[in-house]
Amino acid sequence: MNDLLLRACRGEAVPHTPVWIMRQAGRYLPAYRALRKRYTMLEALRDPDLAAAITLLPLETFDLDAAIVFSDILPPLIGMGLDLTFVPGVGPRLEEPLRTTKGIDRLRVPPAVEAMPETLETIRRVKPILRVPLIGFAGAPFTLASYAIEGGASRTYSRTKALMYSEPAAWDRLLTKLTTVVADLLKEQVKAGADCVQVFDSWAGALGPADYVRFVQPYSRMLIAQLPAPVIHFSTGTGSYLNAVACAGGDVIGVDWRVALDDARKAVKRPVMGNLDPVTLLAPWRELKAHIDDVLQRAEATGHIFNLGHGILPETPVENVRRLVDYVHTATSQA
Image 1 (cartoon, rainbow, N blue to C red):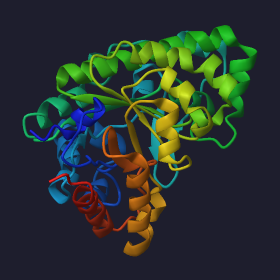
Image 2: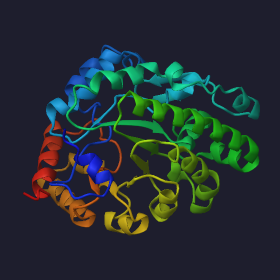
Image 3: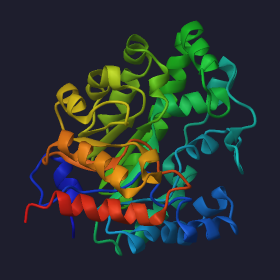
């Protein structure tokens, strides 16, 4: 098996830099778009055969060094008692967001085998087929809390912050429940066959450093400390306090495009993942290549996993993805 991703997670020397792409099984692929015309997001997630096929799609097209199970960070909220829908053209919405302490106290803490058995079965189905590591994933407690409270994405996260500041005991109960649910989900993904896991704290950058340390870091640390496989800890907008993110844990720290990768390495002092701006994949090759070269030069060869600074955009040309993957392999080859 091609185990370069796992070796890079451990900071070991590799013959070339491993590369995978966040949301690599997504809407930029024509085959995925065709499937989504027939199935809703939740239908696809709840059909292990379909989810397995989608997981494998990008590996049939590109020479990637890892697969990531087709899933989403938000379905655990359904098992906890929230009404989640994916609205076409809008994104995920919760019909009745968490707005009261009573709502927090009513949340269930179901085991993953009850709440998300389809994702675990998807992992079991794709694992024997793969010749690259399989990545499992889940949302971090803060990011899930923000979705649950806001009802969807937000620019200000004002309701989330208001709850943190005004009801710290309720915030602790909410984050503790979410930590329990996410930890169990990731441990079950590893049992099912995931070789490593990624924790997505996509909205952690909504906070300043002091609030991150007070309201987020303890729960992320509690989560990551329980996980029995290599952990990639990814967040966005946290470049000014990456050291605090690293202190929460993770074998690899995922970095968005807003911070130079060499500065990130100095801050976290461990392997890093990233951090090409996803929009550069829309640029002509000469410009895209220059951005790739900049990432590689700043990253150094050892302890780096090449990825985007966030998920790939739906309008990304497939040929640019192919050229990126092949070029990273060639440019970093030690042969």
